[in-house]
Length: 197
Image (cartoon, rainbow, N blue to C red; front, side, top):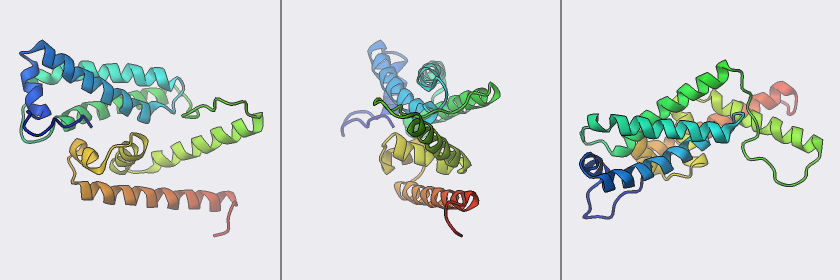
């Protein structure tokens, strides 16, 4: 998730340990955490009503939580990215539960900037809703892999680092997630009578 340092420089886990004693290192580290957190939150929360603001708020919560937890961080061989991801995934899950409890409805993730007819706007929102509903049907790990790979554009190596998986396992999970989405979509089409079984 966070960029890897060039070879010969300390990795992010070492920088995280140094950040406690060096304000400049802390600033640089927290800027990286903020960038990654915001991108992750936009990908996971952007489809909710007021999603941009929700993503902004949760990204800030992640930064605060990482900052507060930094003194407890111990480098045990896992990358720092996994530490940030663990905190971020909990904060996003909390925000999603809160949104469901307050009955916020999902909206189109990327609004169309052009002038559209009312019919095309409704159809676009229904399609976006369908995609988000199908994503919610995926098991947690497959859902996360797909969001990180597709919505955030991370490489298999970056997702593997963040989630504690090998790049090969990430690719397999992505393939399974896409296959499951295809099957779910096909079943939904059959149920609606849009295609024959």
